[in-house]
Length: 133
Image 1: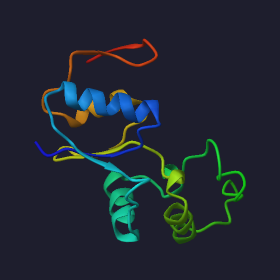
Image 2: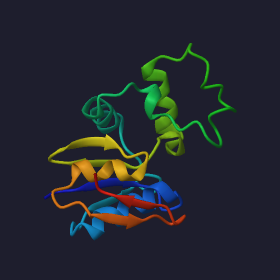
Image 3: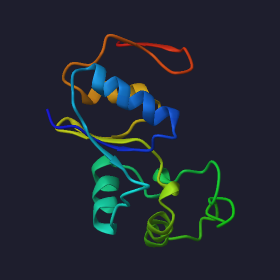
Image 4: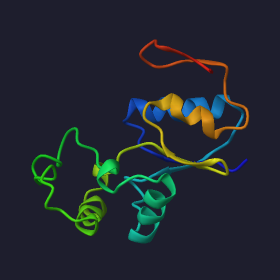
C-alpha cells in the first residue's frame, strides 16, 4: 500500500500518526512540509480530496494565525491558501494519503481507517491507549 504523510516532527499528533502507520507495517513517504512546502495545486488537491473547507485546514493554535487576523471571515479560500503557502505552519497536520482516502488525522487514531492492517492497540506519547474499534 502506498502511504504518504505530510508531517511536522515537532507535532505530537503527527509523530503519533507516523508511529501508527509504521507499526501497521507500512513504510510511508514522509514529507516534512515545513522543509519542503507544498505548492498551490497540491494544497488545493489535498483539500478537495479530504472533502473539507480551506478554513478547516487552518491551524489556529500558535503564531501567526491570530497575528494575521485569520479568524476574520472576510478571507476568501484563495487568500487563506496564500497565507498557508507563505506560512506553511498554518497548515494543520498530519495529512495522510492512502488508496483508501485522504484525511487530516486529528486525532491521530483517525489514520487507522486509512490503513490495510491497522495496529490493534497503540500507546500515544502522552500514555493514552488507542484500541482499534
